[in-house]
Length: 220
Image 1 (cartoon, rainbow, N blue to C red):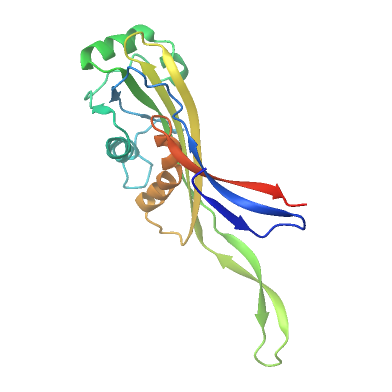
Image 2: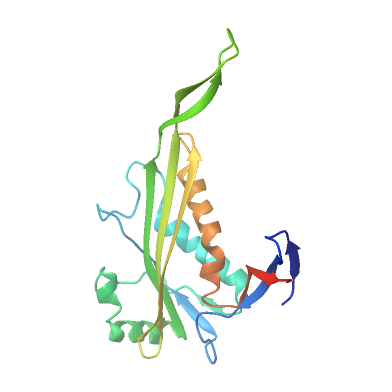
């Protein structure tokens, strides 16, 4: 326990904040390198770009992921270049052990990281009730006000394969939603707010992280 911070709580107890180590999700013993294959962008239209938005989700995410893994882990990061997937169905890909082992042999990596991306931009505008003080009589009234908001939802399916056997070692789903006022919010800014929120969970797949947790200690 590296940190103990006492906070007010109910009678006869005290709430403390603990900083606890959280071990990596993967056992990396004997594994020193990971090849980062392109993540597949999932959308209803099957397009790689968000329709009507000037943002390449796959390119921006791959660039972000390589940067974070190099900064936060001790693994050797390998870029395999273009990959011809035998299928774009992620469930089917998980069964393609021969494909993954062949890719692992080609790039000479211990692990292969890939998965799926779903990035949605949503119009969240609507009316909300707020208090209004009338200047002519000083009385408080309620009125409906239009609030323009844009929502950004990121859904990442992460898969890690054994590059020697092609077996799926780890799979998890990371989701985040961010909302910003205004209709013309930069989608790239929204995307990276999502990623910043998810970064610790992504990195924790490959390395130990510290997490903050609350505990109640009874004093009576």
